Amino acid sequence: MPRPERTAAILVAAGRGLRAGAGGPKQYRTVGGQTVIFRAMAAFCRHPDVATVQPVVNPDDIAMFNEAVQSLPHAQPTNGGATRQESVHAGLEALASIKPDIVLIHDAARPFVTTAVISRAIEAAGRTGAAIPAIAVADTIKLVGAAGDVEDTPERARLRIAQTPQAFRYDVILEAHRKAVREGRNDFTDDAALAEWAGLTVATFEGDAANMKLTTPEDFVREEARLAAQLGDIRTGTGYDVHAFGEGDHVMLCGVRVPHNKGFLAHSDGDVGLHALVDAILGALADGDIGSHFPPSDPKWKGASSDRFLKYAIERVTARGGRIANLEVTMICERPKIGPLRDTMRAKIAEISGVDISRIAVKATTSERLGFTGREEGIAATASATIRLPWSE
Image 1: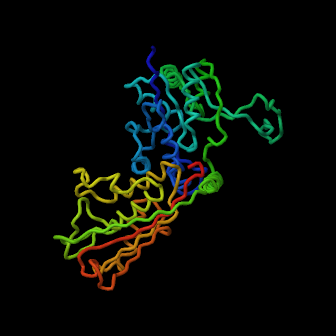
Image 2: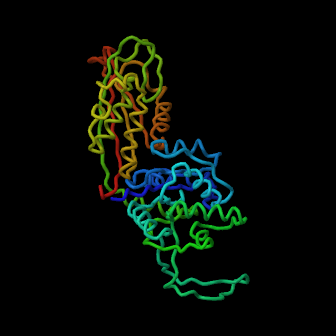
């Protein structure tokens, strides 16, 4: 039985995206609560037949890149060039040490590529050696001259819109790129055009109308509206946590170190606010509770910072195509006083979760000197989380 062919994917993310307007490189902007590059990259990282994902980035963007895709497995990013062609060539050379059989080349500005399209790309490359996803043209196309006059009307039935991932036998497309360098050609706008120039026959396979490139501000507005319309499954979860006081000089509350004459008795850092929020998010997902994901019996969580738990819970939402609509936490204690730190805590939760601060509430109350909180033996916290998931959930 022949061994399965090894497939690698190159994610081209070195461009500046100037036509998308102000706000920095478009691949690091958010759409539907996730960065564009995360959406584009996750599809390949999670595909069972893609062994390696090779990002190609602008070296000035490395901090943004690392923050955007920190939860995704990928190869060490390589630096891109001044043109898309140079960036793809850099990605191909970066894969030389593993020599995959098939390589998929995808634009980071196409965040809605599906598992099905990736599977079709791999199959087509294995069968033909060079193939691109394409969709039919719905409108009549005109060829216009320099003066603005129509010179020709191409036959619409033969026209196609090219997409990515474009798929090739690795050794063949690498040699084509090297040949272009040797002959001083650096003007190809996609790899299919370069492959055609090098003498390859490029096949097509079925693309996807949703797999469009985000180019203008209007594209972002349109996709935000489309995604929002899909997130109609609204769910709410609640959480509760409590920790007793022990020796110490501070407590962690909602990710903020708060000076106090006592500390928490806890396996992790004892942050009752974040723990309650994690349970609320997991409850909304019907995905167990914090103890089932981070059991206190596991020594690796001893002293752990609770921001890791909250980031994990947020990732569970985004992995299912969802987004956070609202987070609210209420702390119940006599001391320390929460009011002066409320906005600091909201800002910290926003930083950890990636949720806009306008969607985060932090409140506090006392128990009127009743019970263990009234006796200042510990702190309790309640929380709620509202999330939006696709109806397919």
